[in-house]
Length: 399
Ligand code: ATP
Ligand code: MG
Image: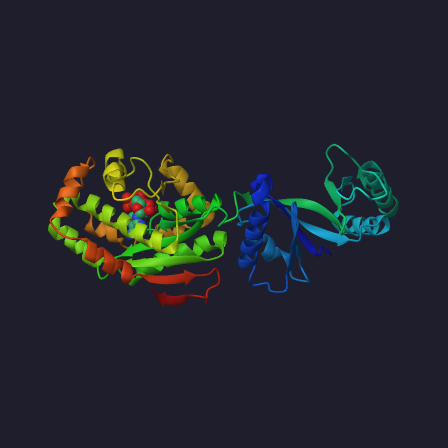
């Protein structure tokens, strides 16, 4: 097949008025990151469309990767020709000849974005249609339900011929809505929450609380694997791994058992908020879903949320577990999430955590000890790992 371009149609991006250029630039940057394994590709864009010139690259793996990029409504393989009738006719015949089976029906749908083009839309349809009918056998026109709908976009710089659309992921380009930190556990919910937040254009940095030796290297690897899965939607993710052992041990000694979980969550949220501030984020994302476990009752959320006034985005708050699992399977995080490695929370979870904690009690239990130096230390010793979609690009650094 002689397709030489991929044509990309924007999603909601097209309605964003003045911000449109910023959105298009962001989308282009994200696509380049996701397709970084194909350096030969050449990108161009205007207010309505983006074009990727294939330069001989196999389009199959590229199409597959584009399916995950937010901000794309649909995309198609395209053949680019000069915007002259003869060239368009020849291109259309070439595409059709390779595409049709005897007995198929077709239709030409021209779009005349170049208002100076000498033929009107119907005349273009007719000229190309006749050319195809004359030069093929056993192919008929059906304008209502054609087997092949050959679209011709006549633009000022060129014409683009396409036959088949692939559905894009929708949403807004990752990063177009600003930055937030995602509290990423090894469970099913938080990667899904991260995915949904990314879908609305949030640039996500992940924060994971890790309690060695109670939690193992495998549990840490699991979170890195989950973050890597999410990179197919964002291109790259910074993962902050917070050493949380000392704080958890201190809470265990200091706070009555039934409030352990509440205080643990309060400390986690405080630390996540510090990291958010350091990284210039504007919100915190969690995988909480109302009523799912003791820490996710309204009373618990009220007591935990008290430690910050930063907006907390809970994309899954109204979702049923079965719906969350369905998305986890679709985005490819489910099988990793259900691996049985211990999480820092489950290990310290008391047999019967209170489901209706009182804020004043949590505050009082914590007031007998100054947690601030421990929080400072945890933030200081946090390790940052930049996770890229390709296997070999993990840059490690401390901050
Ligand atoms: P998940 O499936 O995401 O682990 P969960 O149903 O197990 O969620 P909880 O354990 O109560 O629920 O966690 C609620 C949220 O708190 C998680 O979705 C996540 O955002 C955050 N969280 C829990 N544990 C950690 C951790 N070790 N590191 C970072 N965030 C965490
Ligand atoms: Mg969990």
